[in-house]
Amino acid sequence: MWPWQRTSAPAGGNASLTFPNQSRSYDATRQAVRFWGYDRSMEASFYLAADALQRIQPNLNPDVPGLLRAFDLNRNLIYGIAAKVYARGRRGSYDLNIADI
Image (cartoon, rainbow, N blue to C red):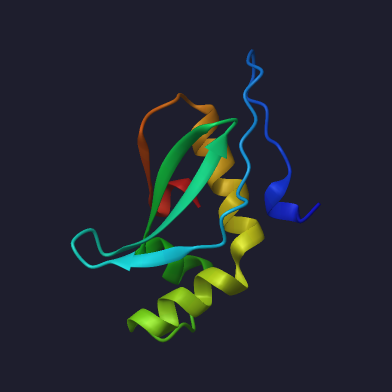
């Protein structure tokens, strides 16, 4: 099992969040990298703000390829942050920002 496929059970719940889909893309409207997590058969969209990603990797090149490369290099950390935000309450999508880092 890859680190991003591990489950995360929120307090008081049985939900498990996995990240089997390696896809990610840059959403120019939100200025964020979009990726997906799954709780059983339910899909959740996550958006990691570009400025939050720059906090994770300060020396990143701020163009789209640089942001996606920084995401790939920090996937385990980002998935852990996403799991914590997800555990706060279920929604259709989640915006991850500097405060979540």
